[in-house]
Length: 580
Ligand code: ADP
Ligand code: TPW
Ligand code: MG
Image (tube, rainbow, N blue to C red; front, side, top):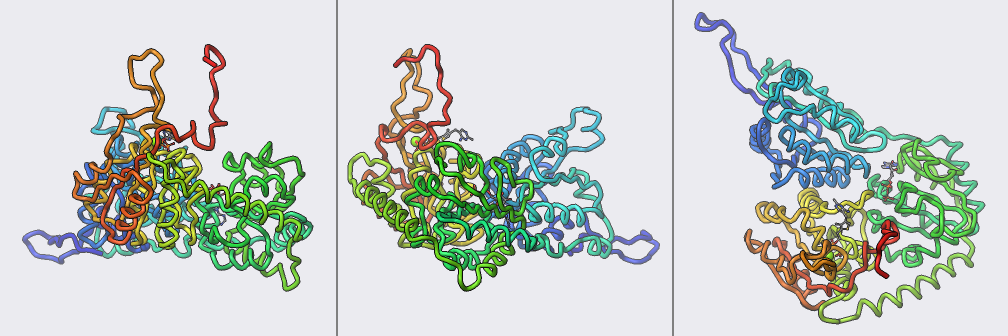
C-alpha cells in the first residue's frame, strides 16, 4: 500500500501524523493483491491518473487507440490466463466502446472486467446533463454476468473482489465495475485501507461432478459403436491438458476440436478426426461434448450435418443450464472440466474396450482421402495467390514454430485457415469466437504477445483488419512480436461486387490494390508486399524470428473467395426482383 500523504491532524498546534491512501491507490492495490498486473485501456477523465499511477506502481498498462480493442485484449488475456483481463475506460462513449468487448467476453465465456469511470450519481440520476452522463451500470447489466458500483473508498477492496470472483467462478464471463469520478480522490487512513482489501481465496473453486453422473456418462460411452468426443474452447480454457490427453488416449475415441480448441491435442494426433469432420458428425452414435455448446457452430446438434443416425449426447460443462439447450442430453456431467475428466479417466479403468476397428478404420480412410485432396490445393502456386496457396505457406510457418500463437479472422480467410493450418499446442489459436465478430484480431494479438511473450501471427481478412487496423500503432509503440498478414482480396468475401446502377463502388469492395503494408511502415514497423507463397513464407518467417512488428500485404485473387466463406447457407436471400 502506498502512502499518499501525511497530515497533521491537529494543524499547527501539533498532534499525530496520519498516513492516508486514496481511491486511486486502493484500486491498484486491490488488483495487484489479486495477481492482476496488466491493464488494457484508453485514458481520459476520470481515469487518466489511475493509468499513470498503475504504471508508476509497476503494473503493465497497455494504452490502445480504441476501447473496443483494449476490451478484446482483456477478454483474450482472461481466456489465456484464467485471471480476469482488465479493460479500463472513461465514461459514456469510452464505456460504450468497451461494452461490445464485454458482451463478447460474456458470450464466449472469457473472464474479463470492464472498469469504467463514470459521472456523478447525483447528477446522472436526476439526468441533469453531467460531462459524459450515462447510467452505465444499468446499461451494462444485461450484457455481463454481474455489474457492481463502488461509491466509497472503503468498499473498493470488496468491489474488486466481487468482480474477480464473478468473472472466473462457474461459467466465466464479463463483469462490469463502475467507479464514479468522486471515488478516486476519496481518502482514508492507510492502515484501514490496507485492511479493507480482499485477497480472493480460491476464486474459481473446483466443481466436482456427482459420481452417479460420471457413471451414467461412462455407461452411455461404453454402449457406443461409433463414439466421438468434441472439445470446445471451454476445454482449452480449463487448462486440464494432461487429463484430457490421457482420457483420449486411454479411451481410444476419435475427437474433433472446435476452432479455438484446435491444438488442445495436436491436430495431427492419430485420433484426430478433424479431416473427416462431416463424416464423424453424421455417422457417430454417441457424442461426448467437453466445453463445447451445441449452438449454431455445431448446427444445434440436429439437422442435415448430423445425419439420420440416432445419437446420444454426453455433455461435460460447468453450467447446468447448458444441458438440453438444443437436444436431449442423455448424460449431463456438471462440473469443472479438470475434475470431470479426471473422474471419467478414473472410471475408464484398465479394461476399457477400444472403439470398433470398423469405425476408426472408416475415419482414417476418409481422413487420408481429404488430406490428399487438400495437399494438392496447398501446392498451387498461382499468381495472384488463391487462399490455399497463401495458407500453405503459413501452415509451414506454424508447423516450424508450434509454440507461436495464431490469431485469425475474416470470412474465407478464417474458414480456410482453420482447416489448413494445423495447431500443435493448447490455447494457441485465437479467433472470432462464438459471435463470429470481426475486429478482434489486433486486440487478441496484442494480448497474446503481452501475456505470453510468444511470437504472434495474425492472419486477417482485409475487411476484418479494417475494424481494428489502427492498433498497429499500439503494436509498434509497445514493440510487440506480432506479424500481421492481410489477405488482401480487395473486399468482403470477394473483390468483384459492382453497384448495379454504376454510381458507387459495390457494397462489399474496397479500394483496389491497397497497400496495407504501408500502414505498418508509417509507425516504424516492417511492411512487406507479398505476391507469391514463397515471398509470403520468407517475410513471415523472418518476422516471427526477429519479433519485429511486421505487416505483410498478401495479394489474393479477388475472385477466389465465396460469399460468407463457409457459412453462406445462413444468408437470407431476397426472393423479389432478383436476377437469375
Ligand atoms: P466452442 O465455441 O469452442 O464450441 P463454447 O464457447 O460454445 O465452445 O463452449 C464453451 C463451454 O465451456 C461453455 O458452455 C462453458 O460453460 C464451458 N466452460 C468454460 N470453462 C469451463 C470449465 N472450467 N469447466 C467446465 N466447463 C467450462
Ligand atoms: C462486427 C459481418 C462477416 S465476415 C466479414 C464481415 C464484414 C468480412 C469478410 O471479409 P474479409 O474476409 O475479412 O476481407 P474474406 O477473406 O472473406 O475476404 N461486423 C462485425 N462482425 C461481422 N461478422 C460482420 C460485420 C462480416
Ligand atoms: Mg477480404
